[in-house]
Image (cartoon, rainbow, N blue to C red; front, side):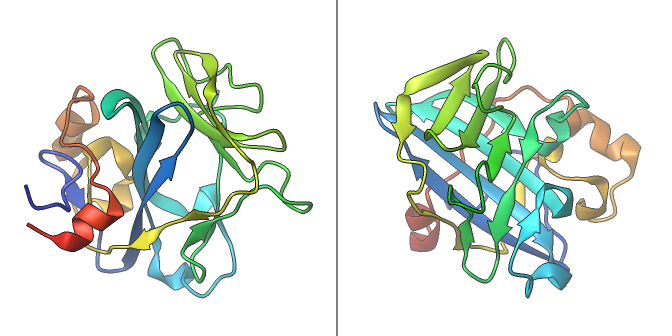
Length: 199
């Protein structure tokens, strides 16, 4: 299958948006794939943050089998949601003296708040790691300062629950609703190398 669709019935990013896809390799056979989109007006910033993100989705795998996912549309007032991205570097910020916890994607520093059937990711001073079903997955941990690159791909199509309303190509709230409540079964995010290879 040709590789840019993240979801059946997905919404593409607007022409005014820039998108990246990414893959994170953890220990113990764990990995995460995902995609992010921001407004093109932010492209020259050194950093963009969680409040700047238009679309975002991550999918977790263990030994190539899906184990969970999280998308921006699933965020609630209780969700841990912190993100630091460097668009000019095509990379996520990692742990450092000035960035003690640059990433908290549905996962706090203790790794215990991603939800009963939830999935999350965090970079803090101890490690880069995953949360699954409300528990820290210590087997997934890698060093906190390891680089986390992303691959620019403005052709990414996101699942309906991954984007804030402005990024959904003029769809009305009524049109968006069926996708927002779709089950989490969709075409997996392809690895950046696979997407670049094409059909």
